[in-house]
Length: 441
Image 1 (cartoon, rainbow, N blue to C red):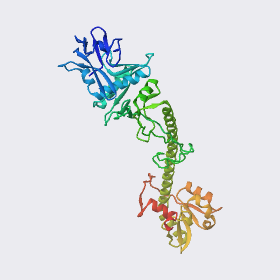
Image 2 (image 1 turned 90 degrees about the vertical axis):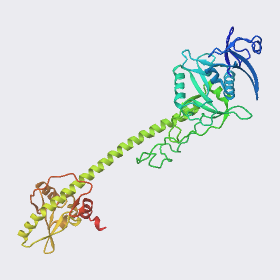
Image 3 (image 1 turned 180 degrees about the horizontal axis):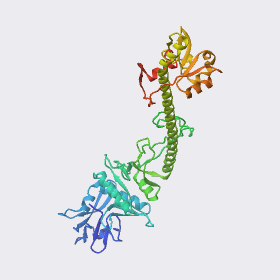
């Protein structure tokens, strides 16, 4: 069954219209003898006008005569559900004051619309496609693209239960109840905004993922979502398309699994979503700035820690290198063989203590910055340094006139300090903890 055919004298006719779309009466071609000169626009096979009732529908359509060849027009027009949906779409579009025609083809044959609705001023054309048969996502996207290239808007309608392409093209799912008007059941959307009470401080994103792991106060990016829309009449939807109050739109608000889907929305919902999209962009900018600052701070702390560890390693090397010459120096000066502490300790400004007859006599390489706090206790002792530069730093912090001796030794070249390195059975961390007395806590 099809709606459109060709009359030998009148040209194109539309069986769904009382005047056949050409100012003629249906009775003039209905069951006439001889048969009216009606043929198919696709295959040129003879057609005849059929009148039936189907529920509340009073149907007039064209049917191919027996033994008709393979015909694309007949194939796309097959099925009562398809037939009735096209009838509804035409009726609803015409009810808004638009013109609507069946089976309108592109001049180059690249597309053929089930129903082509055209605005009264001719500035808008909308293809209303009744897609009741299965179709691949690739094919329906390609057909949609061809309409777009021709400047034709399009909406796909289907009553199929499973519609894998519904999110990929401007489309809606419909249902035809046993009684009542056809309903749009899926494909339209409304946006429900949600914001933190204080938009400058997002209170709903306490998890690390929301802030990309950054620390600090983040502005609210919006928590709105696209809930399921309750069913509503098909005529209201077609009227909204014609009035341009609903438009197909790829959802952009992220975080709810809807972004990227095609939905029909009103201008108001677009504006609400746009507000959230912009707020999310500003939030992401803040996150990026904070992430950059905090990354630089981490890098600076790591560099400082690396420098600190390198300084400690160098101090340990100097202290180790000076043990033997200091022992010889003290032995010749004090006339007794000294004992040397195992490590630097806080009481001696992190220097290694040297004892003669059980009493403190000297300190190997104390840390200059720690000397002032211990100046009084260190004043009677000899302080040893490994270079003139180190001697100058220690002398500047020591008691006036305090004895600071330099025992020049050859030190190994400085090497990068690994995260963990053994020294006399200790890791660097353990050595540092011992130096600062942290192993005793």
